[in-house]
Length: 210
Image 1 (cartoon, rainbow, N blue to C red):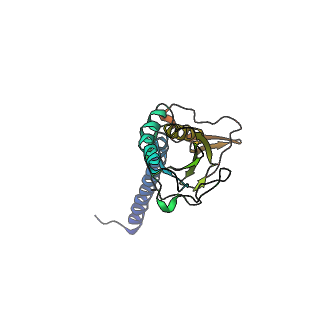
Image 2 (image 1 turned 135 degrees about the horizontal axis):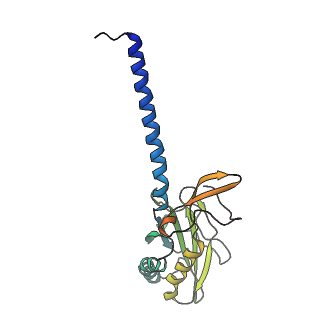
Image 3 (image 1 turned 45 degrees about the vertical axis):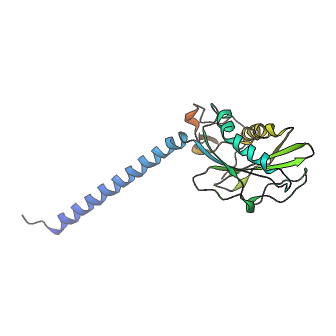
């Protein structure tokens, strides 16, 4: 059977249309599936603990590191789903010495993998008989740092407790805009489905773009 050139062109065009349609459907399915995965993915947070105070006792720093991992996992149970990784701040990443009224967060955060959503710099400084605990969050996507939060610990045993309290106070969820219509935005919160929280923030919420 002899196929004329016009028929060949028609068959080729039909095949290309089917291929384009299949590619579009695959892209739409991938885009649709990426939103639920975002909502069911826990936050991955890297903590770096160090001291800008050269005279800070190394034993107290090591004790705080040892107590911090189980403490934050216990304190955050039932709250935002998170995966914590706690480590000592590299020497090069330690902030310079600062007074009690100065921010001691470093300008550049310690190195973190791209799989980490947030990194937290924790600085311990001795102020007389007490220890000032400072916590600074950074979103890795934008490298934007939040305002440093501080509390005083009266004893070495209170240091990890105060750190855990500041971690809760400074945490800010991440969200994606899934719909915008009539000046109203619907957001999908990272890890939101793990808690059953609403996909919409309250009216008047201030959002910081990444």
